[in-house]
Image (cartoon, rainbow, N blue to C red):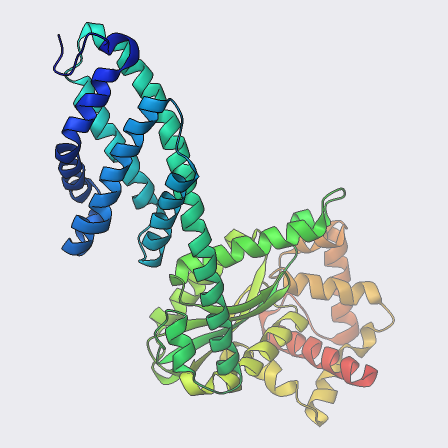
Length: 418
């Protein structure tokens, strides 16, 4: 006979139930000890919480399972509501969802192993039936716990998102709202790196038969997820599928930005491009906390200038676009530089070719693919552009002038249309 057998153990599991009831206090202590050994997050909980709420839920789980064994029915609405409520409190306390679910499975495994190790041959039918019931029980528990946790997280995320948007709005308006930062669960940094993004379409956004809006939103969701992971949730952003603004916390102001800071920004952009599955161009301007409102329009204009001057995807600082930025202002110099490309007005294909060639980083084959022409056609057109303007897009010394001429031309056209 096994340690818990009765004359009916092999048929209806009465012995198993009695064993669990008699061992409940010992199993509660064993599960509590194992939780702190195997799940580090539980070691950080206050002793009062461990011996209080956590211990009570362990004992309740054992009692609920015994009741399920006795009745053959799973948890009722009141029992499930208690599980949901407990998960809600754990979510409020910041306990990870995986730690909560793992605790139930760990406790179930420990209790089952405790019974199975002393089971005799005559108990196998009852132990098998108990195992099947235990899996069903864990299914119901996991559903209730997940539901409670997600409900609370939706509330928390909604509140924090609202607070983050308030914080972002205040910074864009030139205000520093410490209360909004506190409610968002953030600590205000010394400054931010302001990033203005221009995001190209994903290939799916141009694929026939594909919902282009859904493809664009998937791209945006991936980008936001990667940003949250990289910044550990500390970045503030206002993004659409086409671009927008990101405020990346910085541990220093603009005057103390080092190559390490810029390397970090390049790494972020590389990861964003990979996540988006599309080309991303970003203009970056560091700002102290109180100057974010002033620097955001600068970053936005730099991104527009980089796009207008057919710069390839990548990260651009003010010093990278200083000439184009200055020439974007009205004046005789801008008008003069814009006129350098006037000879191309009669040849729209030449202007398109120049723009594509510069945008693709002087890669003739990539430009040809974008234009759906042969690479030799691109070469022929580039030579014709040189003959008409005197500027050679394959000559490094002429590249700044060509980028500047495109910038000035775009701004001049926009002003004439306006």
